[in-house]
Length: 244
Image (cartoon, rainbow, N blue to C red; front, side, top):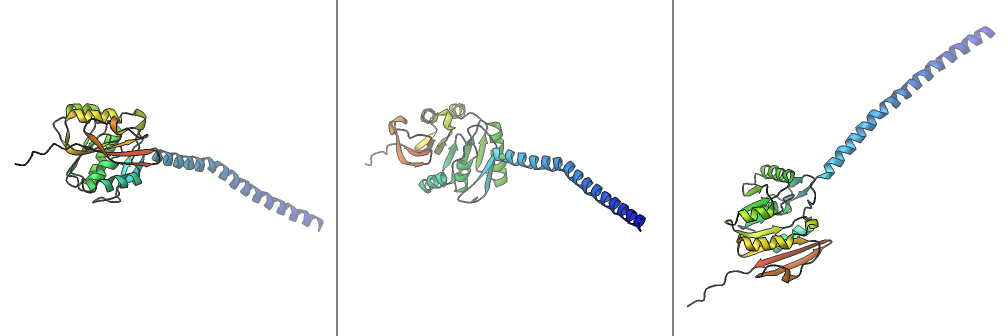
């Protein structure tokens, strides 16, 4: 009886040992698998972080309403916020249809594509960052935006070389850190590319005095939204000939 008990105990001990081995083996397998899951999770996080280095904005009105515009990471690229664009295009609702539009620092294309969506006859997007310009071309193709032209060039250099083209509406929204809005406005005035009565929209990080702008430009609208100051300017139209 004693011997049987010992044998039973041995069998029980062996069984427990085998179960422990299986359990430990499983735990070790889990521990060995953990780094792989960790790498996968890290890769997913890294991938998500890479996505966040770029971004997207949505067109808020017109033919392409709610369509998404993707853009890459680029220093100083700061798409105009939805609420700012909504205010701007409320100001411009009677001026955009059939307008010839120039977006000198196109970036994400939010302003230029918005204008095209709302009926502008032509839109020229000028962007010197190669990756951003390539993204603009992808968005143009995705929207089948035949009225949009993408030009990879420096805004000031392009203005100096293209004085023959005339525009009714111009967007001036360079990176705030470069503080070149007034310089661009003067270059626009000197280029002769503005149609009589043209509108120029400028975004800045601080308000600009009306007298800072070129002669003959008047401030039509201004608004502040957070750190963004929006100014809409109108170029003095040509004087009308007196009637007989």
